Image (cartoon, rainbow, N blue to C red; front, top):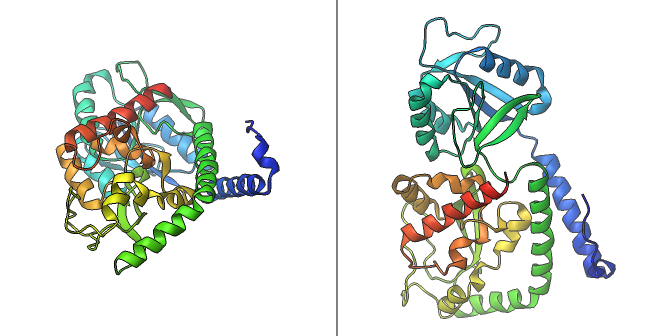
Length: 337
């Protein structure tokens, strides 16, 4: 990989930004050595071979939690300590309860209706879904090949940013966020003083949102309201809202209230471009109303996204915003194949 060495890197600020970005990225790579939890749907030679690869390749950092199969007769996995956990109808609930990261499907063509039903139910999770192919029976927009210990599997629901793509995006985020924060430091200080001078309360508003893989994160914003909601019900701000501070309306309209989120980018919680993070209360509401909503959590939330480009902001009809954001993720997935 080659990094563009612009003339700014010759300046003290450029060198500082470059070194800081490199340090952040390397630290992220070393600290994210978490073991992923996986399950396999189907008990057959291909599934058992995949389980064997997972057990024999600890460097994969994948823990196989169990198998699921509707066919109980002679389907108890042999040659492995991993148990048969239940039926295909149990998969989605198990994935949600145990925060499963990866679902591998190894089922015959006769099971296609049940498999499609299960995939539909898994859309309310953040699990990556792979098909272990004996033959190719699916025509899927996001399908691409991956490998587990040298064995081919087909990804049908996966984050578009893996491997080198993820590394490049992370480097870009860190470098750009660092430069922007340094350039806007005087502006940030002026806004902070104005927020403190015009209303009582903290300068920064911290709110719980959902990030990558549906994990809860804390997002920063300049406080623009006198009431700071972060509970089971969060009311969307409206024009002329009485909760707005003296400068709150201006901050929200100009999006200046979101500048502290560049700190979230440096922390690795957000990206510069991605679907906007919703308050936890809103997220739980939308996932029940919009099919495929949880797909948005296959990428990091962003400071700006496709909905903002299309001026779908604030009081815009929620369904339009959701369609735009989910559509943008599908476009990224298709482009990354």
